View 1 (cartoon, rainbow, N blue to C red):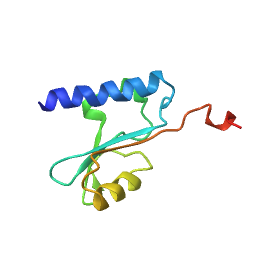
View 2: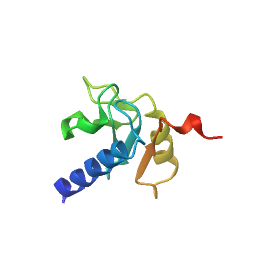
View 3: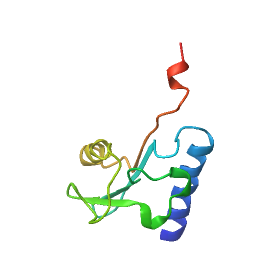
View 4: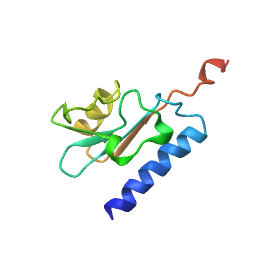
Length: 101
């Protein structure tokens, strides 16, 4: 079950890259875990080529030793702490967003 969940998460991240919602190191995906922690994409890593070991686990406001979470980690942490019905948060920075009238 866990392997299937991980596969679905990476499928979502790669699809967001293909649709230009995420670009290289921009765009964030996070998912809450049953123990109150959450995983989030790392800082400065190409989203298209992430692997399971690249994800950063955050528990009680602290990230895994030796890993750097995306700079927006505070946002999903805040969401998860206030809304236990929300299981995933995505923040995207589409490159063409600035072109909209």
